[in-house]
Image 1 (spheres, one colour):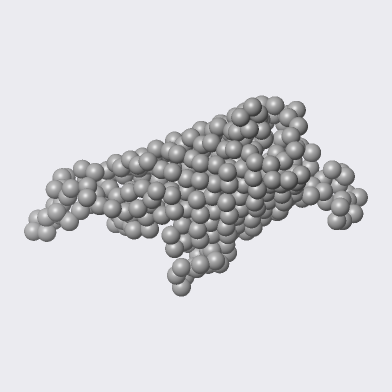
Image 2 (image 1 turned 135 degrees about the vertical axis):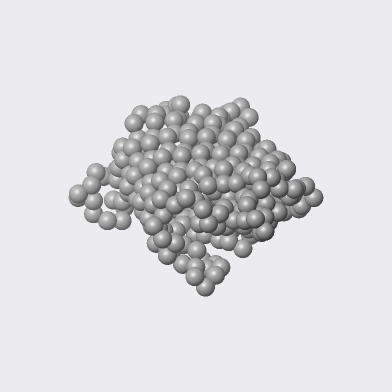
Length: 333
């Protein structure tokens, strides 16, 4: 009971005093819409998908995250429109975060090689917390050693908070390279559970890159098909005083891909922080219009036996015959 209460208190501190941290997916390069609205309509056809993540399943503090999106392209308007839904849940405190976003992206041709895709995103979010699971001071009767079921703490009456959210992003790309920049929560919405509290949600900054090339252009590929490709990716994220840098690579065959990502913590905010926090392994399969991705995060820190994190993604591209310069598909198809 004491350990459970300790986990609950730590969870409350994490979600309030750090002003919340946005969920980050290991397979961000397969579903880049999770990071940047500028990737909406990137395939210049109708595109949809879902991704499910389970983090630390061996701990009481298990976090589950789901993301679903759909976007479509209008050649007449030179634009794309998209909608996404994000939901995150924590099993011990019944913390729940849900958000619905709508986005718009416009394509600008800079020259024969480069395209620029600015985007804006607006959404509505809802956070809730099961504060009834907390044991507060006025519930403890020191004289009798009994626990009262009720509390007069006003925090218990404010277990939900809603907010309006604005984000923006942009992508520069050629047919082999992309550079994405995004900033979420530009309006810094108030996410305090207290009636008169003011806890602005920190702006989430992301700078991501991806580069794809034929392996045969650099090495002898006697043991691989000539069309075998390599994909390099990186993603730097900053929110408040916390940052993270992911660096990954994968090998892409016609129907399958395999890869590995190193997750680092450059800031090392405390003396016990680790530079390398996890090694992530991923694989995937492309079958006609469907693409399936699977990943596992192997924890390298001293947090203990967490069970790592699992992700499963499924995306569907409606028109595989789209031929457009400047809308590369970095998924091995």
